[in-house]
Image (cartoon, rainbow, N blue to C red; front, side, top):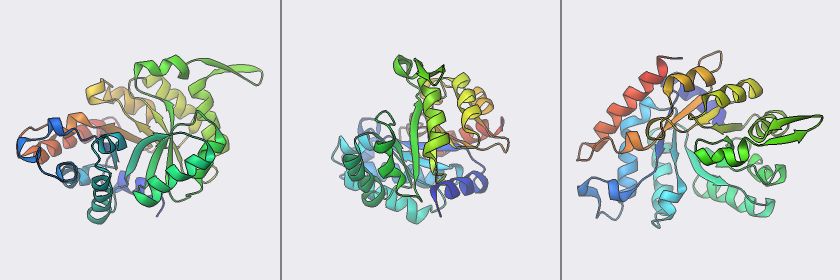
Amino acid sequence: MTFTESLAAAWKNNNSLLCVGLDPDPAKFPAHLRDAPDAIFRFCSEIADATADLACAFKPQIAYFAARRAEDQLEALIAHIHARHPGVPVILDAKRGDIGSTAEQYAIEAFERYRADAVTVNPYMGRDSVEPWLAYKDKGVILLCRTSNPGGSDLQFLKAKVGAGETAIFEHVAHLVAGEWNTTGQCALVVGATFPGEIARVREIVGEMPLLVPGIGAQGGDIEATVMAGKTAAGTGLMINSSRAILYAGKGEDYAAAARKVALETRDAINRWR
């Protein structure tokens, strides 16, 4: 099953547009885990087990693992999710972007080493830097378009001359990906929940293409505005990511149950506007 097929099945089977971000910060772990050699794996896998039936995807952020020399725990985590929750795809949030020969190695890392179902990619270096990812036709390639951080406007909202007219850079990315790059139907875009007007514009450009939407919860994105701007006619099309609000909902040994409670509340809040 391809990434897009798995995602569509998870939207339906779990009645969910919620993507659970896995950004493990050991300083915020419950006390009983902090000194465990496999603390990152244990923390994330228990969160995954507690929320899998409420999620359409999981999104581990590679920097949180690599910074602590925990790449082996990331491999184990993705294998655990695939084994225990095969209906929920895993997006490796890596935001890679480099020339073709290097991109080939990054693609091997994401898809063959970590066995992620999809990966986030920076399109700034153009089509040839994205093609190595597109060679894995059963995988998802999720390209940055309009990011949730305030500084994204420094470049993404600038006007570019395209043909006889002008368009914002993020709009040009959306047109390129939807029109020229998505030949195998495996692409998606990152559009931040902090900019619902831009979500609506991207949806207008790309049609039914899936959108990964970070920025609700700790970053302040509004759920109603996000869903109304980005949902498709079928009420799907979105992977609305929440990380910290779910991961650190509890501080004691019941942290996984606390995470489940917030994930359930978040999924249901999203569904109210579908």
